[in-house]
Length: 334
Image (cartoon, rainbow, N blue to C red; front, side):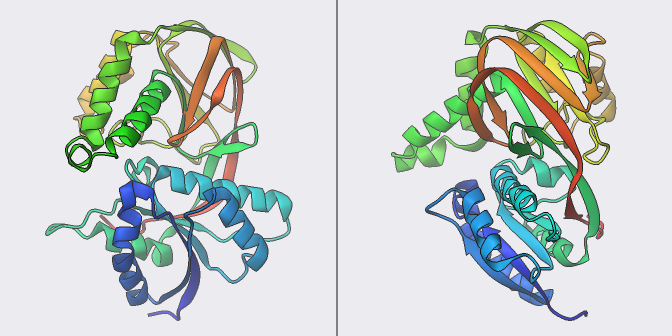
């Protein structure tokens, strides 16, 4: 085996309701087996992006062969935002590749590249994820950008952010009661919050300009600007998404029934023929690819990106940053 390489592990102890902290001993043991020496940055008392940026400004990046995030989509998004800020402040310093250990709730980003952390009698996906740090292929990942924030997976306006807000509120309330916390969680909690918000959500009028041309004008209940393939943990909403093609995918859900049908048909475990039905469901103007997306709304709406929330607004300028960052993806077969 090759000589030991040194990496920085950024561990979010809150990710996946504490899953990152819980499974860290397994990760550390596998790293030892693969001759990976590591520093651990565990962040609990300050924003993750700031903590990572402060750390690499202090230490530099030259000592790290890889920077590895241990957590879910929000964790990876915040770390990569820190890396992009560092590049802006120190353009002459080379960033090492980024690796993902998917120990969050949804893990959309990691799933888009064939990475999970399942561990049972049939598979040892955590081992494969750690192996990717050392033996993975190099992949140059596009990012979406809105203002000074970057997103990896997707940015959403409309119903999905409302459901996420409802979910986060109820999760905090339920967390006060241990029995309820054990019974109402994961998909059960999301389904409940979906039911609370779905029919209450009124359509929004929007004008969407893609690469300088007005592409859509009319109502929608949900709008996704997608970069990677997997969305919402279990859906493939835009199957033509490739996160290194220099394009973002825009998908408009024009009404409540359109929303329901597309999601039900777009489970990534559905047969391919069923998924094709979702692709052909809407009008020809329901999805498009582009480099620059400008969105004007009839009212201010909150925004979700990579599981995080942005303040409400009625105008959004979004662009793709091609090949923005190098990541490690699996070379070992699943």
